Image (cartoon, rainbow, N blue to C red; front, side):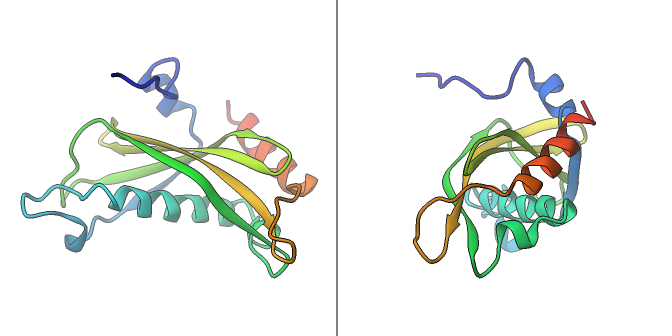
Amino acid sequence: MKKPTFVQPDPQTWIDSFHFEIPIKIRYCETDMLGHVNNVSYFMYFEQGRIEYFEHLGLTEDLFSEKHVSVVADLECQYLAQLYLKDPLKLRVKVAEIGRSSMDVHYAVVVSGELKAAGRGTIVLIDTASGKSTPIPDAAKERILAFEETRT
């Protein structure tokens, strides 16, 4: 059974829609005996990229503080091709959709222009006192939308 993909309309157009990218150095401990990157490592790369994306936009206080914390509600990865220890990995990150208290974040794992894996996940802003979802501050939404929309 083939799962529908969020990589739309085609892989290259989807890759080109990202405006934030970081290099990832693959560590030896993230590989298996055949030199492939272990499937769980992709999720660590997604976390690193997501945090750096929010830091780049100056949103750390809005999304990670004593009052609010961002949590992962769901996370998925579509593995398209193998990654190896020496691959010059670039991770692209974007907020594809933003709602009242959540956002859909996409991840593109790229090596030399080739899409090796695609990821997406829902991030929810939680009020630490109540443990319930809380609205994303308007200023944070505006900053994300301005960053994503002005680069399309």
